[in-house]
Image 1 (cartoon, helix red, strand yellow):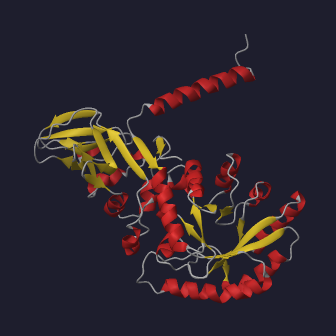
Image 2 (cartoon, helix red, strand yellow):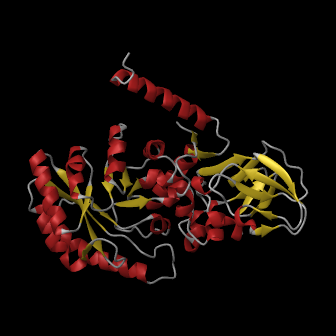
Image 3 (cartoon, one colour):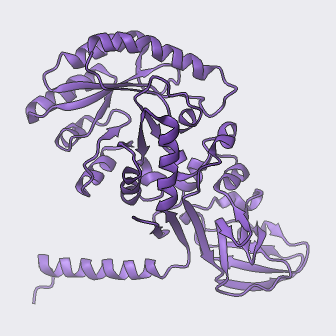
Length: 397
């Protein structure tokens, strides 16, 4: 009997997938994604940005929240389009049945052009060679492709220089199958109201808009506002805002934290105590025995580690986890699959809930708390939660 036929291989793959799903379903460590909170956040941003459209940024698997369910929830809440970073992300949304406008935020490898044209993705362009290649592919496929021209007004990452925007616009308009649908830039310091560079970028952008409009009078969109700029209502004269971190209920930075009060956190991360042991004063914990206890303590082991997205160095920071209604310090180096927390003399049992970020009773830990403790930003904290952590999406319509 041949057990390597296509049918047998498919059956084995199906069994493996079912086993993997069952194992993930039983895992103690889980991220909960509240889609009702996400819809609320989209509605808040849409109200602030009006009459500009709100487009939801769902790149990087929706900042770790799950691109497909987040995209559906955002569109249901009034988002008019989606933004992604990679061809793969756009294609996955299309193949899942999402037919809303999808904007790629930067140029992609030339070999991706055919897929982008085929799936009707709005392409961002700024280099002559990319515009020429995209135009040739669109003509070969025989399909009109919308393009947003990106200009670099001061961030100096990607984009055409302002003084070359007109020539790039003429190049796009001069093709048969490319349509100049939008003009965009990206703000480098919008999350810090004290920085004058933001207004300089907006002013520089305002200078180039009429130049490009004269070349493409039917151009629909002009946009520069990210989450921070949208919350600060800096999207004046823009036709859309690109809302990323704000729709996930997280602060875009300390400078705009006060503007995020209406937003609701979308993701929480929880686990359960897997083991408890009494460790004597003077004993070290974890690899290198780097944390030496100064008193006898009940040490709880949680089944998540740096492979799940918890920083290995968290033990050296003020980061805290809630166990038994109290904030607990992390002791010892975070390992690949486990981390330890100091519970003092409190009674802790296997199976007790541990909250990495989220709420337990009257206590809470914010993603912002972890970002501050680690010296990073909220974006990195949630994006770091790896794919092996199951996501439970709740609050779906």
